[in-house]
Image (spheres, protein in one colour):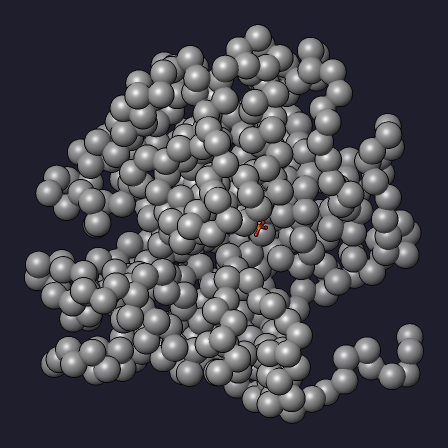
Length: 463
Ligand SMILES: *Cc1c(COP(=O)(O)O)cnc(C)c1O
């Protein structure tokens, strides 16, 4: 160990100046960040972040939906340290392999639903979805149906930021930059009952939203459609939880038209809903699963594509060489950390705990926020939730200036020691799975206070 620390201590102002001068952040308006200065997070423990001013902040988003086992887990640090000494890097190209990647592949085959026995590793969720686009098209090529190229996704989906990931995603603001989507990726309505379906029951609306898929398939021509992709619960799109009728109907349609079904489990995977995977919560069986984020609880960058036997058998038996791969596919340190992380998730029964204990407790408390005059709908399952902020509660009317209330609320939360994210005027949470009941109370208490402060800003009476 060197005597000098690698990263010296600096005053907040100094960090902010250097940050502005040299660091281009993701999803950031550079000019407005420079005017405000970044919040500099210096350390974290359990469910709490600490910033350079020493403020303690309850991380209601588990980083970016990923730190499921909480911050400061020694087991993960030790797994990385040990693996770096043993074998810090080697690849799996050219008929090579190494124990961490093989062992993690075995564990994932065991943890995931029975149709999955094989996995392809990437550096994160975006790259995993790029891999899926290529595998899906390769699969149909090998089967002699090369005209099956179109992948159907949904509005406001988030599938990453690479060219294919952003194209699969349904974010209009992303498509508007850089000439997206790439060809043969199209989008249908998202199953967003509160925005699109309040004229009918959620169950009826779920079927209606799923039937948009039939309309799209028929419009394109069924012989051209390769796959459908969806997050079991749309995360970055605003925690859109589809009615229970939605996914079974989507699966029925995919089977009827022989279309591959892809579940992007990057947010829902590894316990978020109280099941290991969101597709298990909603009761459907995908042909691919995209995994990332909580696969390592964010301690190392890693993504994975679970490939069902139906597809993998074709690629293995008849596919020849698959011309695709990343330098860091199956990175040994990331895989070792993933193994340690999955060992904690299983050993501490954190997924069961979400389903049977802390999930129901948080949801009960979270629903109390529905009493607030600013809140038009509360939804959630397990340890994921959303609040719809509305201008007029009885008529469920959205604010005319969409997004302003959300941003104000988010800023109040940060200033009051809580990370809650805003998507337009939807406030969302996805805290670490190790959240205690006391911390759930703290989260809900702070959220209520910040809703009050937001209502005051907007001139809405809170009684
Ligand atoms: C975050 C996310 C991705 C992209 O993962 P990266 O690791 O950021 O590339 C893909 N899909 C979903 C559902 C996500 O939430």
